[in-house]
Amino acid sequence: GGARRIGFGAALRARLSRLALAGSASLCLLCGAAAEDLSAGRRCFAREAELASRGAGASSRVVFQNRDAERALLFWIDMEGSERSLGPIEAGGSKSMDSFVGHAFRAWRESDGSALLEVVLGETHREFDIGPCATGAEPEVADDGTWLRAHGARSDPAMEGCPLAALLSEEPVLGFHVLCLVVGADGLADRVCAFRNGHDAPRCSHSARIAGRATIAELTRQASALLRPGWRPPAGAPTPAMFTASGRRLPGHLSLQEVGVPEYRRALVFIEGGEWHWPPVRVGFERELPFVEPERRTERIVLRTLALQPRIFEVKSFIEEAECDRMLERAGPHVAKSQVSVKDHDRGKDVDNWRTSFNYFLPSRGDNVLKALDERVQNLTRISISNSEEAQILKYEYMGRYKAHND
Image 1 (cartoon, rainbow, N blue to C red):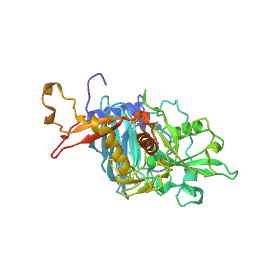
Image 2: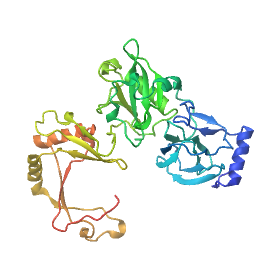
Image 3: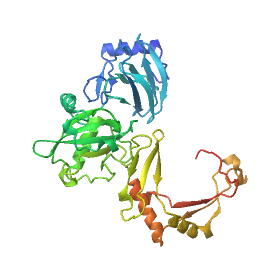
Image 4: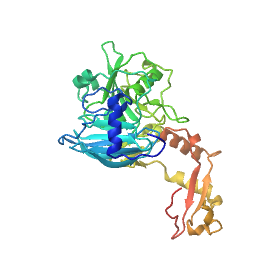
């Protein structure tokens, strides 16, 4: 196509069709979350020239995640087979919308016109990755559609004991995959039934056989191949990891049996980003977290979901009155006028133009009360306190303000 930028009119589509028919280019249909009953592996196909949306089936919420390194353009294919633009999706971004079973979609890379996705929305899959074809570096994991149809429903006896109600969310949580471990005749886990992106669906989206004595590292690789075939984390990003249902990271060298599967643990969470984050489940959902402070004898700490998108939580009973008093006591003598970082053309202007608060970053060293608070933060977030700032103490006078701004 040359070095110049090209549009997406009829001429380009005709040219791409000719290339595909001539066998000179392979265009990508990603079936990791495929429509209808296509296999869950990522495959490459010639562009389907006659693709069109069918009569609207059941309504459905659909999510497209751009896993490509460049901006993608998303289109809905109408009943006549014409592309109707749904706008761009930045690299790493996502777009969600209401649609219907039977509707077709296509995505192209904006820079060079490469086809990235061509799919028809099916009955069970609701989340789709936009990205290039797999390179073959990741081995394929067979997705057992026959088993899924027979036993994949959440009400099936095979799913008994999986604590799904506290892990699956009404809105997909991208990169947060819930795995139910199914027990075989020998009493060991012999299958994983996965809910891709932790979506609260009537049945799991993917399934594959596993070895009951596999290590956590082996299961992590298998889950990645099953749910994100061909995917690799970006350079410098955390590696995918496996967690318990309460957010404890599982060491890769331990076996499933050594971490309690299936004796007392039937669900695990595979997180692509490698760091724990709590699933929102639904607005109003409350989750007691006794492990955040096991010795507490007053009210239990509770995480309550206030919103799904963006994900917002309220942490109830996190800090006690006496602890607040201790923080104010320690910070009081050090609180000073807050500073701001300004743009070059605003240098020399009074900070009060933007911010009139006073603040202090309070170190915890040497204070057992503050150290206990640090430990509580670490237990709640499941992230080491070494990755956290010191607690910031803020003071606003009457009519004080901090103007809305972008950092």
